[in-house]
Image 1: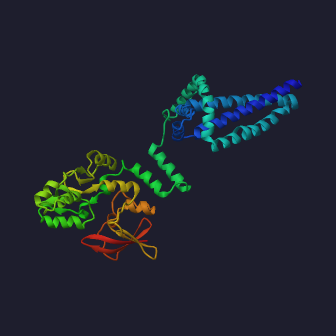
Image 2 (image 1 turned 135 degrees about the vertical axis):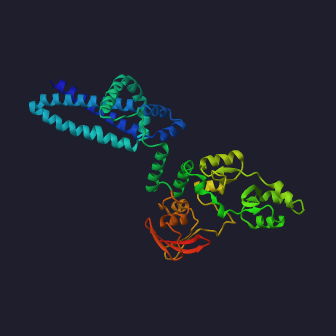
Image 3 (image 1 turned 120 degrees about the vertical axis):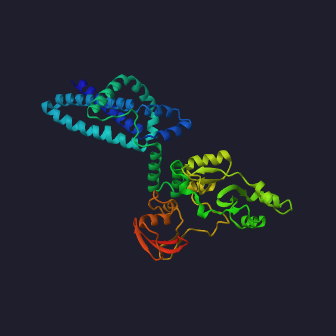
Length: 417
């Protein structure tokens, strides 16, 4: 009798260890991310590939773990009930329920899962070689259970796909970046750069281009010396050139080409200007920044002219404009001192009306809508359904906008508080 009790005690103890092993392994494998495991695999961790293989068969893995966990828990409870009855009689059933519930919750659930959450990758690499044969061994059983579950769900009109993922990869990356930023483990500038790359496919050139009203261009029919002075006095390397009317762009002039001609110690003629022009790259306004970036790289042209569906000039976009969507505003020695936002002593901001809403949201972490207008001026006009005059004050989206300066039918300065 005594020997039989010892066997039961040892069996229950071993089953509780097995239960904890299954619970901890489940948490470790499900908490581990494919990206992290892929990185470990690239570093030479031999078990990382096995762990990734198991995660790719998540339904079979979870089914095998739950099957094994429930088997050992039920068996442990049955043995504990038998042991309690032998010691305490019929009241032993109640003792077995209370004692086994406490033991399973503490030592087979909370303890192993807490450890697994803090050491998910490490534990996943350890247990994955053990679970690989278990998953294959129990595959017929787990496959049958999956079919039963899917059948029951289909009765209630709930359709599920295998390995279904609700969030896209981009959404997962954005969520991870936001989480790490809020926890202080990722700088805002780093988060903005990664999200900027993710946004390239969703943002069109129309959203970031230099509007035609702000384009710096030269007329090829002007005196060559006047054109040369315009190029020298500008802060641009590549300048669109037009003829007959300012929307008829015939080429791009590169200041470096003019320098080569000047180095020959002779006057620049209109013929020299025409020969030095670079053939313009015309693109539709609906082109995404991702496509445009590829186009810049393939054509080796850093400036493109944007037109609408009727071929009408809309603006221009450069490679630098796209890069600024990723890394933020890029300035050099010539750009120094030029700013579209000025912080006032009272804490308010004086903002140029042509400043893009995307840039404002990015710099100050605001949430002004970007769908209806590209610039702050455009947003105010859209919301007010009128063209504001100086001194008017508007209250939109939790901000107070005061119109400071209006010139040539354009809102030049806006005070924001």
